[in-house]
Image (cartoon, rainbow, N blue to C red; front, side, top):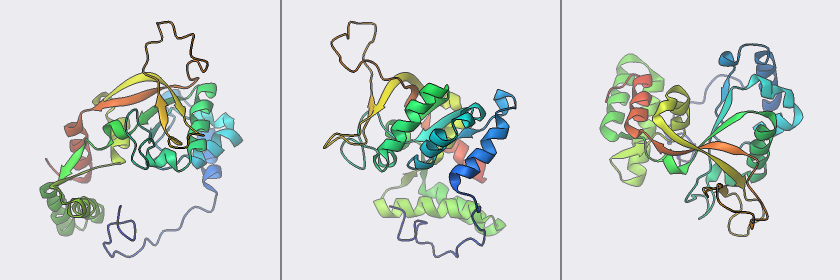
Length: 248
């Protein structure tokens, strides 16, 4: 999807920075526990952009960290179509147990959850022309991050033969920066763990629970989260471009 090297086959040298010596779960614990004693507004928002294995381990191992989390906005899932399979979105499909644990743990621990899934994922887009402007701007000013962003968009345009490409996971970050650009609805959500064809599907319950649903042996899912169903695509693309120093 993103080239043999995962970075658009740009041939750039690897970073000279070293990863933290701590396990990801220990690092998250060390960052979040001190935040629990501060004001709610200052607590961090977690934005998982991959399978939520480490987040599930964190909440199972150190549930006290929930007091240091303002909310979780995760890129994953879908109310409608999948992409890894006909039913399931990629991030949830590759560790559905973790996604199920996170949703249920957040329901138990009182952590707000926003699902930025495939229903909105592909809509914020950047054109090849805008990508080329970013590349040129980065080359002139030695802003490698600006050039990198433009080249990754350009790679996707060339790969799919299109004149624009999605900003992808960055949309979930835009949802934190500009939450009023996202249309969400609080809905019960479960993760399918056993289905032969539907394993990893986020089952978004859009029924009217005011009616008589006593015939349903499962009842409503305990996890009621904010499901993204609409997005101001142009605004999020603008946020992405302006952050990198580009203009639309």
